[in-house]
Amino acid sequence: MKRVFLLLVIALVILAVLLGPSALAYVNTQGPLPGGVTLSGMTPAGADLEEVARNLHAAFQEPVAVNYDDQRIILRPDDVDFEVDVNAMVAEAVPYGEGLGYWRPFLGEVFDRPVTPVDIPLKYSYSQEKLAGWLQSVADEYDKEARPPYGVALAPGVPFTSTFMFQAGQPGLELEFNMSGERVLQALSSPTDRRADLMLVEVPPPDPDIKELQKLVEARADRFPGWVSVFIQQVGADTEAISDPEIAFAGMSTMKIPIMLELYRSVLDEPPDVETTKLLTETLGLSGNFTANLLLRLIGGGAVGSEWQGVEKVTATLRELGLKNTFMATPYDTESLPRTYSTPANSRTDVSTNPDTHMQTTAKDLALILEWIVECSEGRGTLLAAYPGQITPEECQEMLGFIELNRKHILLEPGVPEDTRYAHKHGFVDDSHGDVGVFWGPAGPYIVSVFLYKPGWVEWPLSSSLMADISKASWDYFTLVANGGQPPTVDTPLEAEPSASDSGG
Image 1 (tube, helix red, strand yellow):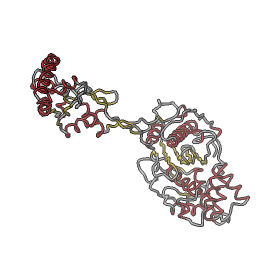
Image 2 (cartoon, one colour):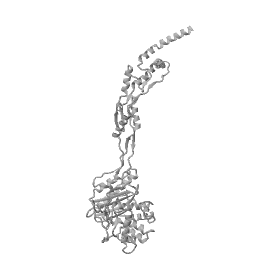
Image 3 (spheres, one colour):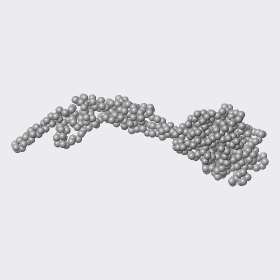
Image 4 (cartoon, one colour):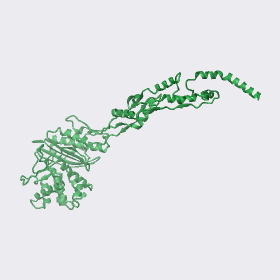
């Protein structure tokens, strides 16, 4: 037993001789906290615990660089009441250096057994309310609102046909608060990586707004030395681009559309015969007034003079459909006027176009009539609901076919590509021009109705260039709609300078 004890003493003495210098060096290099212990990833620095706490506090009071896209914003911990509880962290680390724990790193070296490091987690507090408020202030200053597609502002005198009339919308940027808050806290909690990239969400541009088309129309109408009335609408839509669409105008040859509608409603039960087809062709395709009166005679019963009853039936049907501003008081080219009509449009005192007392309409009324015919041709809409059994989709398709015969490359026509399907009816007198048409664009059929008045005389190039510009802007807008708000990749300017000899009737 004594021998074993003696051997143990000898071994301890030898161990002390061998390890003594290393142990002494270890003791001399130890700081106030044990080796192998870090504070939130930081090696404790300081001659005593108070200095360690001060240095730890200073490290987490450095400002944070916060990036919003390409904007750098400085956030100070005090801005959000971010505070590290350094005393609690130091106190938690102290026990690891007591007793044998003090010698753990040294013994690990001696026996070549690495000691598992100990990291004291960060203990902090902050104001959620202040962080949310700070993020909100950043969003208020730097968030970018998505911009919808918008119309191109051209210099006065530059035709709309020279370029695509709309620019693509611009996406927006919005701060995502939850993830951004986490990233900011992560930067505030790091002693070394004091930067944070905010989480941003790209907001797609809104859909094209037809009011942008309306702005272009109004800007172009302002350049005309007279009254301009416009109604534009996608068939079946509930929004429109307008510019004073309920001004009373002379009905002119545009009234041949409601004449044809009434013929199909009240007279034709089968496709028109050869003679009636000829009358419709000359009336709608060649804008014949004489043949229009013959169609009114058919509507009135067929006897000589019954065209007057035909006029009354046309007007009565328009009233049934709710179109109070459109009427025919006489057949075409008739001087006598047995009665007059008072309408909301011709009763206005703020504007007057010297409308023909024999027949009148508005841009909106004619647009609605044509829209209803298009909807009817597709098997839906007002006409089929109002006159079941009296009008069929096939008849409405025939009506559009007759209107499509009007091809003179004037007014609204030059505003669309040559291969576009369209059907329009124009009319003119000395001081007024009008045109209403349906155009089958990339987004589906849409209606454009334009009437204008200039006291005394409307020069043909003046009215034709105005209508071509409005038609081109409409085509461009509905192309934009079809492209999801993006202009076409290639813009081919359209030619739009018809001659006065192409004016038609």
